Length: 116
DNA sequence: AGATTGACTGCAT
DNA sequence: CATGCAGCCAATC
Image 1 (cartoon, rainbow, N blue to C red):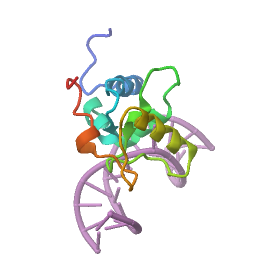
Image 2 (cartoon, helix red, strand yellow; image 1 turned 120 degrees about the vertical axis):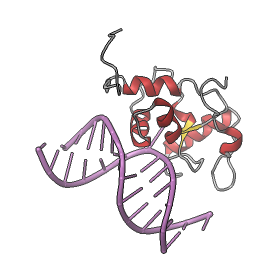
Image 3 (tube, rainbow, N blue to C red; image 1 turned 45 degrees about the vertical axis):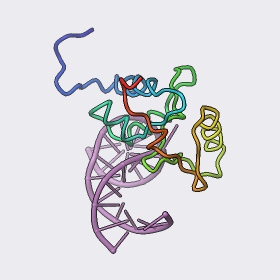
Image 4 (cartoon, rainbow, N blue to C red; image 1 turned 90 degrees about the vertical axis):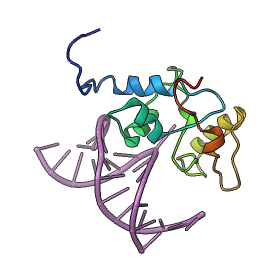
């Protein structure tokens, strides 16, 4: 790996790789918020995490469906197919939604890396 | 190079 | 609890 050159990580190319790397650590049945991932990745913001999730290649093994917004809700309009697909996958893992279509982050929220 | 958009968030109303 | 607004960073046009 290219030693030297660190300080503030200018690896913009590795930004997505970092985000995916963290996302892959989210265990089944748990969900993480964009802001949480951004904080763990560092030098990143929720917007970028969302953009990265939208750009996840299908075979990367990244559980993009376990990433939701800070309100504990899926960030797609409820009447879209993408929303239904994501919700279906989460429920299949045991994540529950209330009548407001929100999950309880205190129960299903991912504590963070190393909580395995 | 400037403007616009997007799977966001926190705070004020 | 719903809505509005500003701040945020990268990708696209």
